[in-house]
Length: 357
Ligand SMILES: Cc1ncc(COP(=O)(O)O)c(C=O)c1O
Image 1 (spheres, rainbow, N blue to C red):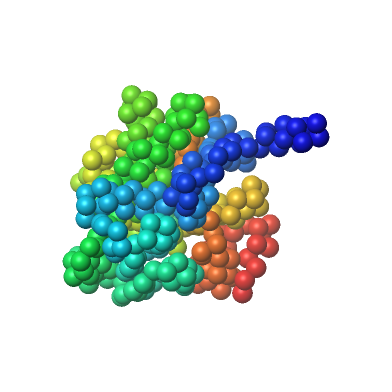
Image 2: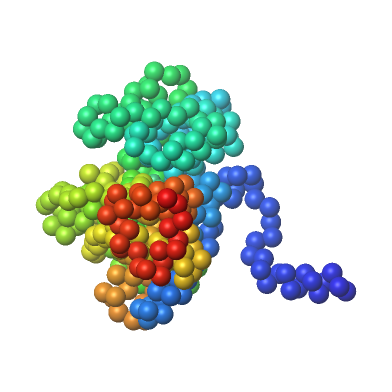
């Protein structure tokens, strides 16, 4: 009797009782969290897809799984093979996990500007990490080109090419988009997020546009120093970029193959300054108890701006790509915030969260 009573209380909290098929089975099906403070302020439902709850800690687990499984299906990757990628971090972390789960070796090339936490984690996950000087994409020594060249020297190896391999966007057409549609019971009116490879933004946008017959609006969110904002605003005529940003994993200098098929679906773009991003990051911590990385704080800021543009009564969804854990030595350091000119962007009552020197 007592057992049954306890179970009926507990079952309110249980959404899926079945064990998953290993690490891989735990990817996706993340919660959609209502951001109460911003929803109240705008009169909209502002919802964040909690991608930091993926087993590898970010949205990139989905892309990692899809690019590896596409290579398996094509026959390019056989048992015991090697996966090589150029990545600024989260894709590498997702790939390192997926490779351990499936028995592949994992080699990661990255710009040497990335946070030490990310580099260390990749090594702990068994990846062979190769930090290389940060040079533009058109330089043959860019980390992506080095990754490609290295894969070509090996037998039974693939360069997963997250930027232009459309298995990346397919992950979001098949999983993220349908999950958002089901979780909002088709009531989503707007979707916004920023782009790195653009797999998340393009794939999710493609699904939501198709399933809603074009009703769902899609706004590209962009940090300073990225070309997507000017590309959308100029209807493809300009690829201007201005400034730079503290955000990691997002910002792009070109239109990737993951974005190209969907550029005509983009309704508008928002450029979010770092001062707004950091304020949102601290606010979400204080008012919601949600601890997000900067790209996610930018996305939530964009959802808030989109809500103001669309007006009360709308449901706006964005992506909370990862948590702040991998960036905390920067985001919560007074010295670092001051060096970036951002310490004053954090309101007086939130300054208590700047706990590191
Ligand atoms: C923290 C973070 N946010 C956002 C993104 C962008 O996702 P996508 O590559 O799907 O555009 C990435 C990509 O690595 C990321 O690491």
